[in-house]
Length: 456
Image 1: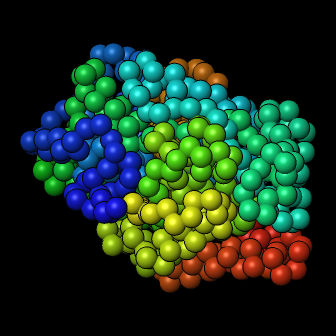
Image 2: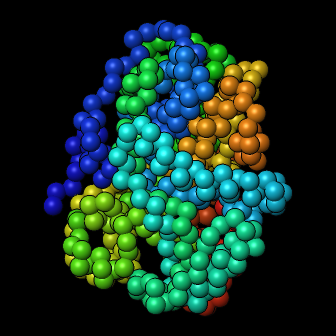
Image 3: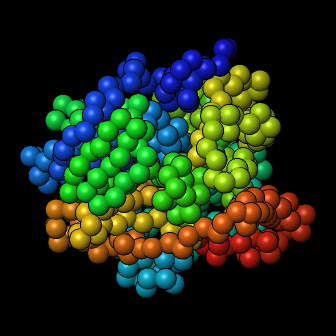
């Protein structure tokens, strides 16, 4: 099969199979006024617009996007609509207290269902199926980690994690797995592109091919004119690093993916993954995958390095060595795929704050709002962010505005060369931790040292 590479279709498997032509909308024609100006046409910005209109249908909302809606991580991710938050519940408890940590966990679990409800209300077919996440334990060390996760979930009394025995899982070498029902498989480009169309039908104006140069209280400056608005929402995630005023607030870290050709039902029966199920394992250098609606594997992982100066370039989306590693890893997990062809290869930057703590904020005095820092867990977290921004901007007194990520301020990233050295050393450390556990059969010391730095 021929890999898709043409235009915006070539951004990912999801873009190649979405149900619209991806033609850019008109650019900003010049200066204009609005009630809310949103910088970024991904899910954070679009969900913010969606829920702001629910609170006040008369709002004049303008969305400004450098490329097309869903160009970034919102359209290129792994399709996990999960209850995962970048920092663990235990880590949040240490920072914010037990009640606050559990409130955020409950909100994330509810968000998985809210995405499905909202997509239905907008008339979107996003291939939503809530099948949960299977996390394989493929060594004694990993099985102990799975048991610890389930025990922690039982202690908190919020999650419904289960421990599965080896008889229920078929990944190579699996001794068991943890199972988290709070995850749905979706087609992310169908969500973000469909949400953009639904917003336009409700009066939101989306300007594409419009590069934002800077923003401040009351004004967004673009290469084509200014948008004046009393509320400005920054929703750029990893691409925020391209603006000088945000460069040290967020670090763009690349994650890459592959998709196989469709596999026959007989192969899926042997693999043992049902429609709607996502999967990972307990290695430290993260992998993630799903069974797509058309019976492909969509499979990704970390491993691509951070680039000097938080640079974001199209050529960084494709690293042959990482793609080869992903295909090899997938074959090791599920030998039943045989020589199945890889039809799509892609990647892109996600946003990492210095303390791996996502945040949503609003300053009523300046009218500036923002959300981001999802570290790859944004497909559902963006929805919670959009609802929270809507409540903050409209002054609603809700449980959402009291969650502990509201107005959280992460430290700035270090200047170069410390940022380059530290982030890439961390990547190497996670790979080394996996090797350490394979050799010693014990939990990795390197991973224990790195844990507090990556939200654990």
